[in-house]
Amino acid sequence: PAYFTAIFIITRLISMIKISSKPFDVHHKDIKALDIAAKLSVDPAAVEAASLDFGHIVKAIPQAVLHPSTPQDIAALVELSYYNSVPFGIAAKGHGHSVRGQAMVSNGVVIDMKSMKKHRNGTGIRVSTDGGFADVGGEQLWIDVLNKTLEHGLAPVSWTDYLYLTVGGTLSNAGISGQTFRYGPQISNVLEMDVITGKADFMTCSPKMNSELFYAVLGGLGQFGIITRARIPLQPAPKRVKWIRVLYSDFSTFTRDQELLISRNGRKDRHALDYLEGSLLMDQGSPNNWRSSFFPHSDHPKIISLITKHRIIYCLEIVKHYDDQTKNTVDKEMKQILLGLSYMPGFMFQKDVDYEEFLNRVRSGELKLESQGLWEVPHPWLNLFIPKSGISDFNDGVFRGIVLERNITTGPVLVYPMNRQKWDDRMSAVIPDEEIFYTVGFLHSSGFNDWEAFEDQNKEIMKFCKKAGIMVKQYLPHYSTKDEWVHHFGSKWKIFQQRRHQFDPRMLLSPGQRIFSSN
Ligand code: FAD
Image 1 (tube, rainbow, N blue to C red):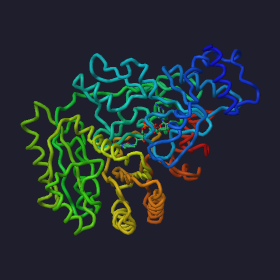
Image 2 (image 1 turned 90 degrees about the vertical axis):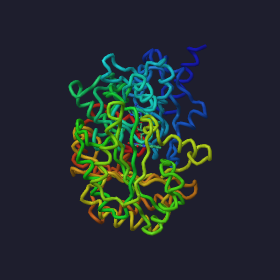
Image 3 (image 1 turned 45 degrees about the horizontal axis):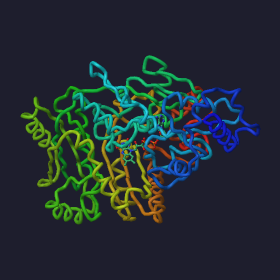
């Protein structure tokens, strides 16, 4: 019966995808196809889940969902599509935390990467014997990487603000947070990967081995292959962190201090911070938001009256790690760092927390929103990289212009700088062409009926940048025309295209990015 069920599912899948008018010839093909048949689901609940993401804006319905147990299952599916006369699209779905359908595929097959986690039997994250690196499955969540490596007193150095994202998902973009200025994005902290290409080839790649694939995949928006393993370098984990926020009413003072601090970014520089971010505080009822409940309630009145006076307050956030060896000197070093800054006197707030609590700081906000039914709502996010030369105009025209005028912004607005030198230009990720650039993230939550108002604001922001000549690049990019993509990649477009033809010539993978097709 298993054999017939397998044939039934595959035949049904193939005919539904309309690959061929002829029935699929299982005997002629590969026995591997039979192995995955039982793992293909057309269950309505699985299909519905695969047609949604965190954005709740886009919906694309696949024909089936593959629940792989092994990388070989993934390769078998890719092979099935690659060798068919009319191939079907395949989208690896990590944790589905994209906001524009990037991990979806209409009429194709979504690979539920999380299924692999269940079958790895605890071997999905392996720390090397010398503690220099961890081999991590592409389907693993960063929170699990953190917990596992901490058992060895070790941790990766570059993170995202939120840890319930998969390794494959963030490496397909960049993986940025307050550590990026010092350690580079997560894609700058990968030693080696196993990748299944769009030709179903199983390849190990690194800067020395199959380097073209290595650089293509990092920041490659899932267009070249599916990451099934990444080797992430580790360092001794600190025990605790000193975590400070200071406030500014003046944008140029705020950015001058941010830039001063990120100029100390050497890995061995004792005066370098371990984390630096920034955000806007606006009239949103409370200086805290779902991403952070940093400010104590007793300080809310004085922060709110400051916001009322200036309408926007700029908040600089910095962190220094410490452990038993440095616990007696960390306060002195932080004091020294703060002495050089020009924040508003009386507006310095601090915390001293466990390293893991700091890294996992967004989780409590998520759980709170979830319990109120406010997590699964539309997220019309806009994430940008803005060259330093344009950040002051951006503040005038967008933060103090469009944002205040429209007055609809809900949720965090992030703004912090990073150094281009910590990124590797051979990778697919696209950043502005200046040594210092800022990331700005509008992390809106909206109701189901009003997300279009945020989209309008996003469009107006993009239009403003174009008109003002600010050479922005989108992070987690989303465009609707080929011309926009070509413009986005700029001088990298040619190589991006070449690599796509080399590693996924039939354009099977991650069609939801809508770079080479409208899906
Ligand atoms: P998915 O949404 O499942 O997939 C993203 C893309 O990668 C898709 O095209 C998919 O096909 C492809 N893909 C997935 N797995 C693989 C794989 N194994 N191999 C190849 N391609 C694959 N980003 C940051 O940089 N910093 C942050 O601080 C940050 N915070 C966030 C907080 C929240 C609450 C959310 C929702 C997102 C945040 N992001 C952040 C964005 C996040 O990094 C991206 O959306 C990322 O793609 C999400 O990972 P995922 O596992 O959910 O990927």
